[in-house]
Amino acid sequence: MKCSVFIATSVDGFIAKKNGSVDWLQTAGNLNTDMGDQADMGFNQYIASVDCIIMGRKCMEIISSMNLSPEQWPYGNTRIIVLSSTLTQAPDNLKDKIEMYAGDISALVTKLNDEGYQHAYIDGGMTIQAFINQQLINDITITRAPILLGSGISLFGETHCDIALQQTQAIVYPNDFIQVKYCVHYK
Picture (cartoon, rainbow, N blue to C red):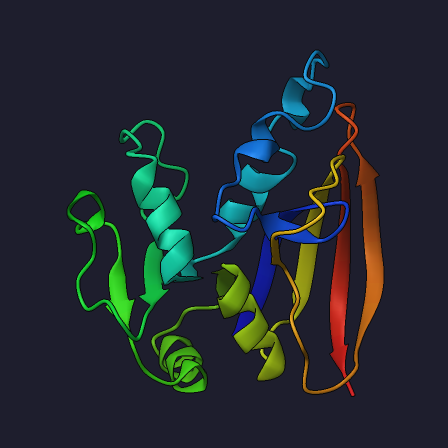
């Protein structure tokens, strides 16, 4: 099963402020630019390519705090599994949208593969780091917002080995965001 990442960072590599806030994504870049059919910066095409999502608890909590209406829900009917060793139940506003998992991630990937799933979207800083350290990520798409946060939650933590990334594509958007897609090669 293919596991991939699609995420935004600040130019200095942070996915959120120290308090978990991602509000800077709404104010970064040229806000007066007409993005036309590129407004989602490829997210809808990407999400249409996945058949399941695996995310961390903190990521799920941010989504829960948004209290999205059914019309705002960006994931359609895609199966969503939330990794948590502390929570056993989903928040009330997500109960019908997610399932909780507290086991080994390699076993989860094997189970999903055996069930016929082909492409998992991996989301959340610690979850992405865990998947990378178990050499489970196949490709990474990083959209860099033109902002320096100076500190916050880093996308990448310590890795167990060097990981080679091969750039497959770079896109510069009219709002000054830059998206880079990489294939991952483990040594």
